[in-house]
Image 1: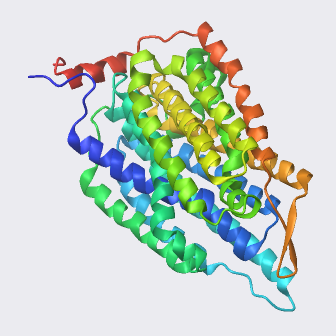
Image 2 (image 1 turned 30 degrees about the vertical axis):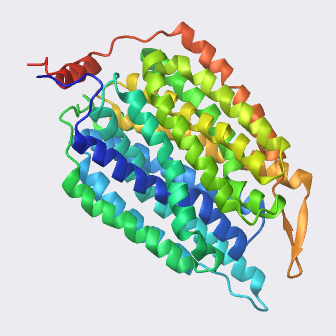
Image 3 (image 1 turned 60 degrees about the vertical axis):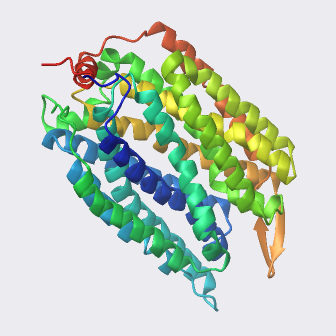
Length: 442
């Protein structure tokens, strides 16, 4: 008997779900709740949040490129996943200890706290990206085939949403009570525990192909003009990913603050939970559709759904309409990432899988997180919406962050149309993987 060409072993699914979910849970804390922590405890200046996001993105991208290339050279991913998750959890647990002192020298204390949280966030991002974005994502590429990647990436795409849902449902009361040390400590402990479990669960796929050149040459291979000429479709897809990613980073860093402070919805956890559940259903069902109609063909429709949702969220001011428009906004966002991510896996050279994770980080994290939050911060500062809390004037995110995100997302039309010039080419390595799954390989 042979397996279905779209099937995956149960052990593979277990690793995808557990390692993927906890990784995204930790990223949720870093991408959203760390911003809330900084806003509530350290500084309300949106430029501080934008700088924090940009600095961590640079560190994460550098780590992914270095560790991705290193894991290519050694031909293994397990050690990088397991060890990285343990260190990732330990550094996450220390966030809550960075708090400024209030007194005569409060301004200096705040400045030191800002510097400390940025440095700590960068260290955490190095461990997290090395483990998740470099090693784990490379392992997923090598453990799947073109026939099932849409489904797998559809599941992976909802992990950020489920991670948010878990944090909102189980841990948000701690943040409301100001128990930030316990909050970060719990998330850090769970992340480290999964690192230990990964050592026993993860098995290298057997498809790891070491690059023919040395480490340094492999590290810079992806930025060479010859590499772009050899794999133009890959780089066009990465450009599309950068556009969509930038669009999402215009509003995501400020989303919770917007719901709390601009819309004044005390039940924001219900809003977010409803949106995330609905968007998760859309993403999982959409993953199957992506495999059927074609990954690249699904990109533009998914982005259009996201844009429609962004426009809707821009116009509403109450809970129920916000939920109804938030589902297509986040669902389209997840489907866009699933379609682009699966397409990038298909276009990845089989002897450069780890290296390509570094390129993916440039497109999906570095560019979006350096540019997007500053676009959002500019919109917030320009609108100049403020409120006074205990004598302190604080700036508030406005609906214009969603309008700006929609305008950025429209630009994805350019790389999507460019894909027509570069049709998919047969990937012999991927075909070999497919044959193994089907039981037809020798």
